[in-house]
Image (cartoon, rainbow, N blue to C red):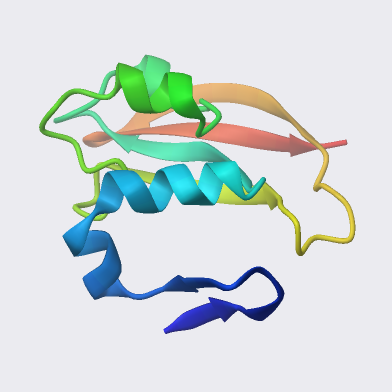
Length: 109
């Protein structure tokens, strides 16, 4: 289990299995910010690569996709949150396909 003690935010695999939508909404509501860096092209198109994980992202996900990406649908980079001293600054770079995955470059600023 991973714990953000100051925030009383707890993660464990069982919690996301019981309610992944509620879990990711809490993550967003607490002020964490993440971007997708890789998406599985078998379930998501290239437009999802480089998207910020927010309520718009969640509403755009197909019904068969776990909103936490727990089945390998996408991978993320968390770049800001209440326990960060400062946000990691980056810009979105090129999106390319390798095998069945779309990868989005994150360029440091």
